[in-house]
Length: 230
Image (cartoon, rainbow, N blue to C red; front, side, top):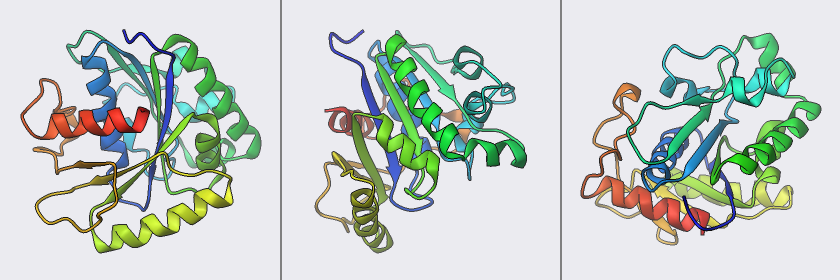
């Protein structure tokens, strides 16, 4: 494991469809490949994307955790990847009624507490965070040491990135890193800290693809994780 204090990081989508969930999984797997113990939380209740990487195993989830119906241990699911470290995810998969209760101000405070608790037993805690608007997204940004904005490397992504700078400023935060996702041959957004190309596959059942590493996608994800966590 790394000889350093725990890193806590919110990966914040500049817009819907930025690929933040997939990048969180790949970054987590990259760190686990290096021997880290990693936990990843889903704060994107609208899409519940992390659940796709937990298969059919999800019973207790992050919303049950935030409504005090489950413990952190019950809501963490270890991904079956053969690496020296560990990647456990705390996904969202819940009925509408519980989702609504998990979006309250009190639940948001509990998210901050659980991120802090996970940091005691993990080398890194990642939070898959939607564009900052709802309580849980604001709580995710407040709960972590570092914030990385993930934006598609497109004109639309550039516009969304500018708006996200404003939203973060509204809640007293600012990005520590900007990651351009789906960054292929033509560069649209110039001022970023890391670029990640399109993955060779997108099917959740085939992910994470950084284990074992390839020659282009995996190094780009590693660089993104490196700059995001400083």
